[in-house]
Image (cartoon, rainbow, N blue to C red; front, side, top):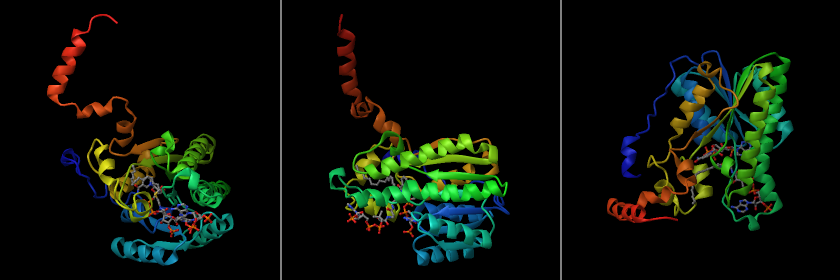
Length: 299
Ligand SMILES: CCCCCCCCCCC/C=C\C=C\C(=O)SCCNC(=O)CCNC(=O)[C@H](O)C(C)(C)COP(=O)(O)OP(=O)(O)OC[C@H]1O[C@@H](n2cnc3c(N)ncnc32)[C@H](O)[C@@H]1OP(=O)(O)O
Ligand SMILES: NC(=O)C1=CN([C@@H]2O[C@H](COP(=O)(O)OP(=O)(O)OC[C@H]3O[C@@H](n4cnc5c(N)ncnc54)[C@H](OP(=O)(O)O)[C@@H]3O)[C@@H](O)[C@H]2O)C=CC1
């Protein structure tokens, strides 16, 4: 952490009023771990009945039990590989039986690893883009069609990343797929408002989770450099994403659709600004530089 992080302590308590999601059903892909688990916990604390889905049923079941025992609200675990449209259809059928169709859908499941692009096999490319882009599309289309048929409105949220906008070397399948997810959600925000559906996107900056850090910085060698470029001087916390996701998915945000919200401690703009490296210039160096600039005559 950098010194300035003391100005920006994370508030990790649940932000919305108790009961904000009473009588609501939330479906969260990848809800067993990391940010998905944090979002599930927050929505459950706010009264939602949650359904979490991913490949590892044992992980989901453990998370579901831990969260429901803390909140008193049911969390259902449903096995689903989002790459398989038939598995997605079965998962949604199971959810309809358990809870009915959801009011809140969070497409959070993802796969990623750092790799020079020249080392990627076709299957490596397929593996990431299938989880991130096709998985999000299969879940969104399956639920969207059923919600439209039932004339039920819903809030859809996708978790992308700050480099969905800029692109990034070494995570090219993820960058490409996340950019596709953003295009999908912005497009559907325009098309499906008429059915009562909202579509929004959260782009998190770096937040320590085992899933992300073990695949993106396996040796831990890059963490210090990463924190040094974040103006607020620290990593994000899962609860900060969870509070934002709860707000975006809540009745306090019914006028929000097609929004792309970056929550990254300022990392994106810090990396983008051409002159931001001038942060390193000391006051004495500025005196000298200013004098040189002022003494310049003509062009
Ligand atoms: C300046 C540097 C700063 C560093 C900062 C670090 C911290 C940064 C934080 C910011 C993060 C920003 C964005 C994060 C986005 C995320 O999405 S994080 C979430 C990550 N979570 C996961 O990935 C969880 C799920 N992942 C998985 O299950 C697996 O990792 C996988 C591979 C995605 C899928 O598993 P599976 O289906 O079992 O696939 P496999 O059969 O194992 O593999 C499929 C093909 O892919 C090839 N492969 C696998 N791993 C690698 C690798 N490391 N390098 C190259 N290729 C790989 C594998 O060989 C298969 O291909 P072939 O059949 O051709 O061999
Ligand atoms: N942590 C960070 O710094 C950042 C994270 N993000 C995004 O946040 C989200 C959560 O990531 P994070 O919590 O860090 O990482 P995790 O690895 O903990 O979360 C990924 C989840 O996706 C699930 N998943 C993976 N493949 C599939 C599949 N084929 N079908 C269904 N579920 C699948 C995993 O469960 P299982 O293995 O059981 O299938 C896991 O629960 C992702 O969208 C990620 O891109 C974005 C920017 C920064």
